[in-house]
Image (cartoon, rainbow, N blue to C red):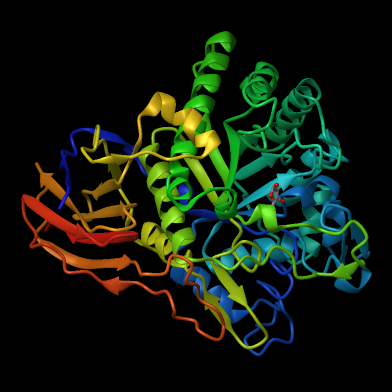
Amino acid sequence: MSTASFTVDPGFAVGAVDDRVFGSFVEHLGRCVYTGIYEPGHPTADDNGFRGDVLALVRELGVTTVRYPGGNFVSGYDWEDGIGPRAERPVRLDLAWRSIETNQFGTDEFLRWTALAGVEPMLAVNLGTRGVDEARALVEYCNHPGGTTRSDLRAANGHAAPYGVPLWCLGNEMDGPWQIGQKTATEYGRLAAEAGKAMKLVDPSIELVACGSSGRAMPTFGAWEAQVLEQCYDAVDHISLHAYYDPEETDVDSFLASSVDMLAFIGSVVATCDHARAKARSDKQLGLSFDEWNVWYLSGFHDEPDRPWAEHPRLIEDTYTLADAVVVGTLLITLLRNADRVKIACLAQLVNVIAPLMTNEKGTLRQTTYFPYAWALQYARGRVVDLGVVESEVYPIKAQGLQRELARNDDVPFVDVTVTVDAPNKQACVLMLNRDLENERELVIEWQAPVPAKVLRCETLTGTDLKAANTFAQPTAVAPRPLDAPAPGARMTFKLPPRSYTVAHLSTA
Ligand code: AHR
């Protein structure tokens, strides 16, 4: 059996895990809001119309931050439509997703929902069809204490205290030809600088995220970030990255190596940010906000241009497989291993739309991707240990985009891993991946300190069928199972099943 090995020395840390990397995303898209988190009349709904079964699962998951209201939706959204008495709210066309938007759920409902879910809100402003004025007005509505028309309107709408929304996205994917109000980098950079300036004049405590490219494959990737930051570096705190990995665009070996692309993406954006910082002669280091990431069967998504207009149509309700769950796990490992720069990340999305949670009229379903996400959210806390190079056998992969990266990065290691150590709580977490489709692989961990004294939990997601999935008919077809853990101690050898993703939650007390 082939063995990978490395040493855990918490003296060498990448950085502290920012809890905001365990975020998610709720967009007015398909059934994410309507019949996802909000369904008045559902047997579990509370007085607000929030589904109690979904709220309970979101709390169980431990999601920290939720981005709202889009996505592409925000670029045509008038936030004023979604506040005030429900009966008076206008019904609009949502051009991003060819849907009828009733506005029965808006900013106040979302912020009430986040309070009940125990998550931090992250709001996006519309820089597609709108601009500086609306952006600063929304910050005033949400965060100003009172005594102005907008903040008093918030009080009249039921929330006297300011919401204190801490995180704000300056638009969404403004480089994309599909975006309503798409902009050139120069147009967007100026607008982001001015909108950001006005928003921070209303509330200097907020953090702002500028739009990076909508994907690494965009022809303007790199140049977009450089031009945008040239204009708005001083005004913003983070830049966004979005990445979706499509299982049907590539062979399985390459798909399981999707994190190679994510790693290269992060590296390029860090380099561009730091170049912009040098040019701006700034003391400030920008964070990366990976505010959309996931597996998405995008090549199978063909929306019809003449699809009939409807309220919350079923859109992008992908069913996730075991392979998809393993990839979500590897992407989490990659986000954590870059904890020094990745400060925010949102699994896109939370419910029904490319989501770990699904709903129907009767109940909820945990998709396969729920489990790796839940493990990281529950256990990966404290500081990420710098593992240096993990000694592992590698395999070659064929995918075009990845192959380009691999020419510079060698082949793909079968085994990947990250370790977090939460010293104050005397706990550690190991997230492990075995990409080998055929063979079990050993992973040897030498602990310098603290040495694990107890294995609190050791579970794996694996199976013979990488295409196995959970459905409402078979909700536990793919579920974690206990893995025989090694005895706790200075040297621990995990035996990772083929095609698997594994968590070990350890006590060091
Ligand atoms: O998450 C689905 C969509 O993907 C978002 O609306 C958009 O930002 C991205 O292109």
